[in-house]
Length: 312
Ligand SMILES: *[C@@H]1O[C@H](CO)[C@@H](O)[C@H](O)[C@H]1NC(C)=O
Ligand SMILES: *[C@@H]1O[C@H](CO)[C@@H](O)[C@H](O)[C@H]1NC(C)=O
Ligand SMILES: *[C@@H]1O[C@H](CO)[C@@H](O)[C@H](O)[C@H]1NC(C)=O
Ligand SMILES: *[C@@H]1O[C@H](CO)[C@@H](O)[C@H](O)[C@H]1NC(C)=O
Ligand SMILES: *[C@@H]1O[C@H](CO)[C@@H](O)[C@H](O)[C@H]1NC(C)=O
Ligand SMILES: *[C@@H]1O[C@H](CO)[C@@H](O)[C@H](O)[C@H]1NC(C)=O
Ligand SMILES: *[C@@H]1O[C@H](CO)[C@@H](O)[C@H](O)[C@H]1NC(C)=O
Ligand SMILES: *[C@@H]1O[C@H](CO)[C@@H](O)[C@H](O)[C@H]1NC(C)=O
Figure 1: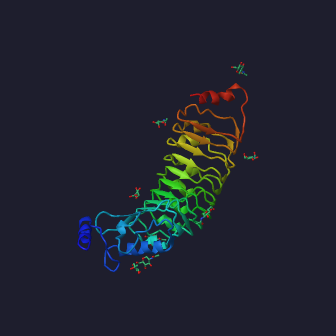
Figure 2: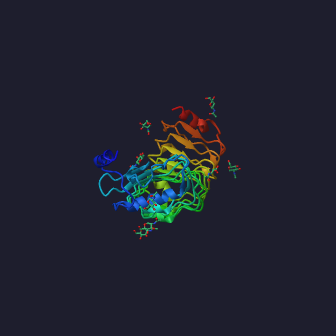
Figure 3: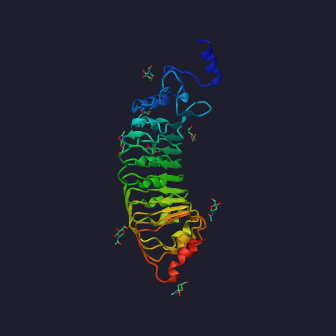
């Protein structure tokens, strides 16, 4: 054993390094150790997070492949982890990917503003509370951000509009209030804007209706109130799902929605839309359409045209 072990370690590059040994990632080691200290781990997911195992071999941890070996990826999803997320994670300066989703984590979102390389951040399906930190706006590489299904409160920081690489933003199923920031109109690469099941109010900023990259727009179950712009469908050539259900949208359903030809699902139910139902006949991929509980009318044969068109 005494002979074999060192040989194994040599062959694989990443081996046992005692904490007392000076090595290039001692900062990452201390950060993760501090994180572990704040966590209760009933299933032993962090069982090999011990000093005698190199951090690059710890469960859920991946490092850069060339020296200096730095922590790039921490993925601990669905491990029943409870406790709070230590601010020490904000010191993992090479982190690209942090996924702590589907655990029972409590407390607030730690300050991660120094993680300039962070691309993906998944803290969804936990019991996190408090507000969304402004400082996240500093993580300028962020592409996927999912904080959905927590207990986050307060308003959505307009500074998130500075995250110009953002493609996927899900803050759904929290207790967020206030309005959707105008600054989101700057997120020109955004494909998914999912803010459903919060307490958002006011109007959707005009600039959101010009985000032509959007594929998934989910704003259902809020308190948004406005008439939709008549031309909204003309600006969404890539839209696949439109969810505006259970709000206070009013006025007519824009006929132009029928021009967003990629649409597969439209849910406008439980609002205060009035007038006639436009034709969605061009939407050849439409498989879900829910308009129930509005104040829509159909008078005369031509009003039922939408039904014939749906046959297509
Ligand atoms: C592991 O390393 C840390 C940091 O150097 C130290 O504080 C701790 O006492 C060590 N734990 C054990 C069990 O040796
Ligand atoms: C991080 O690790 C997880 C789990 O192994 C993997 O699914 C994910 O693609 C990795 N992400 C990156 C950016 O390396
Ligand atoms: C982050 O690293 C700095 C410098 O190494 C250290 O002083 C600080 O305590 C660390 N912060 C946390 C929250 O661990
Ligand atoms: C998380 O929230 C759920 C739903 O409110 C609750 O049942 C559960 O006990 C909470 N868990 C923790 C660790 O706070
Ligand atoms: C944001 O980035 C700037 C510039 O790199 C830095 O000075 C500042 O401390 C960062 N703020 C936070 C909250 O991380
Ligand atoms: C309909 O769906 C198919 C299969 O996903 C896709 O190839 C096609 O481009 C879609 N049509 C439109 C009009 O988006
Ligand atoms: C608006 O819609 C809601 C839910 O469908 C309904 O309860 C309410 O009566 C409507 N209000 C008006 C002014 O039509
Ligand atoms: C409506 O359609 C029915 C059946 O096609 C037709 O008999 C009827 O005359 C039409 N009514 C009007 C007002 O166009």
